[in-house]
Amino acid sequence: MQSLLLSSSSPSILTSLSLSKDTPTSPHRLSLSLSLISSKSERGRPAAVSCAMDQPPPAEEKKKEVKLWGGRFEENVTDAVERFTESISFDKQLYKQDIMGSRAHASMLAHQGLMSDSDRDSILRGLDEIERQIEAGEFVWRTDREDVHMNIEAALTDLIGEPAKKLHTARSRNDQVLTDFRLWCRDAIDSILSRIKKLQVALVTLAEKNEGLIVPGYTHLQRAQPVLLQHLLLAYVEQLERDAGRLLDCRARQNFCPLGACALAGTGLPIDRFMTSNALGFTAPMRNSIDAVSDRDFVLELLSANSIIAIHLSRIGEEWVLWASEEFGFLTPSDAVSTGSSIMPQKKNPDPMELVRGKSARVVGDLVSLLVLCKGLPHAYNRDLQLHIRFSESRKTRNPYLTVSKRS
Image (cartoon, rainbow, N blue to C red; front, side):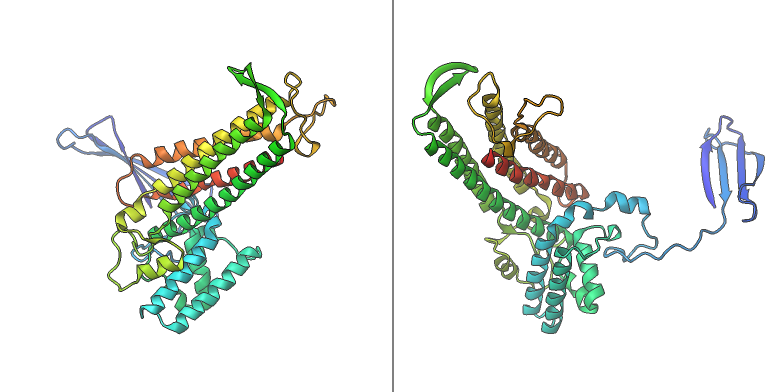
């Protein structure tokens, strides 16, 4: 039975509309009754139109798995809400860091007497098996389990039973996701630093191969003074060195452990935050639990550093596109890093460098989007913040970018 109240233009009339389906054998027939009921409006309030539809009892729904947070709920969320709120489609990339954090957390709980050694060992073996399944492509990611944490934890429960349920002791998804993402960002920084170094080496090698070569130096895109090509190439190397320095500074500031902050105010259980912090390679636990789960400045700083790298690479891409043109004619790209035209066979296009230039917009856009997302959020955690993981796409853009620049 559903009811709908609508304002009526007449304050003294209550219109009652009743609709009921006929028997299931005649699903398309509706019986309609309309009655007008005299009613005095109170304090000038308009009467209402009441619409009620009697429906046959719904077919028995497939029983859904109880959510980790579902203790007080009597009804399941709808499929539409499930699809709208899931994050597994993008945060499953944190699986390795999530498993790493769970290993450290389980070991700490056992050390503190909050879990038996046998339960810890079962959990560690189960996590090893889940990691193997994921990397072998055998793991089934389920949208109804929302995110990477609940997918892994529920799969662990399916695998080893009751001991898995103790893994969430003294831990919330709020501090869990921040631990995962700080680990992920740390790995991303190390990966980007490695590729920056390779690009620098490639540029220095190219400079050495062209010792003494003189090219025009430009201001306002007009020929200004003759310069050595080595001098110009080493300008890129200096810019990349500062980029690497910014990433190292960012890495040092973000390398603190939020695990143990729980939802926002910690836990009364006797956990050892220094033990988990050390096990995960962090400098120390974060000092303020509210700050630990609510702020994303470490992501903003990484996106800012990545945006500056993107601008530098975009400028390299632009200059090399110009140099490859017939008007400049300073270089001929290798066939391995060029494309052609389906209608003009004489052409060789420096498409990869054009895309290096173009994709910089995505990285800068990620930074702006996250700044806007964070600007109006009160302390502590808000669901908006699950979207910050999407901006890790910046790392996906960065790495191939640097590889293309090196090869070109």
